[in-house]
Image 1: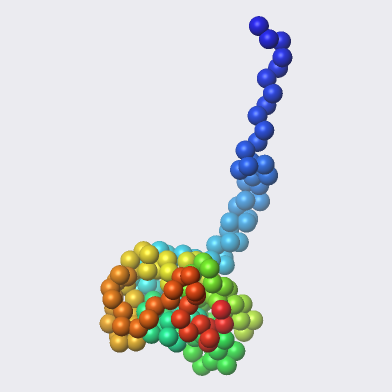
Image 2: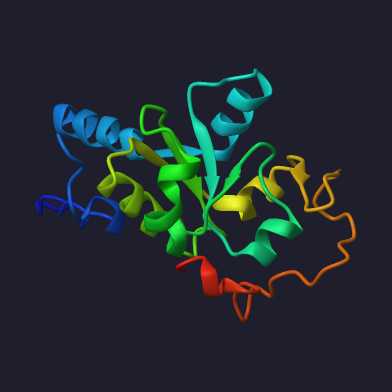
Length: 170
């Protein structure tokens, strides 16, 4: 029989930094939701006919033509200072997206819109996750397609970056 007290196990990497107190966590997550939304919530709202926000695609013209969220406004991030006043009502909140998690074009677009006085959220996952969920998109030809349908224009290569990213501000 051993008289030694068992040593407590070292904390796992998950708990090496202790979780925040519940009130601090609630404040953080509430603030985070003020800045972000996800593709499922945007899709659900649009499918239900929501008109209390506008979706802005901040990608290049070539990317927009390949496929975008139905009903979205095309406003490349680099064009926001010049064109936002003509395309957007400052009283209507904006949900902006770009390529996906590896691109911060939507973040730049959101910043530019906020500086112009717009209330704005970023759609997490961008068009990449919209497509992964299987949601329909509009193309320059006006038809909708499902991800996996053939395109007649080149698509972005995930290893080399977006096609025609020049005007998106990425």
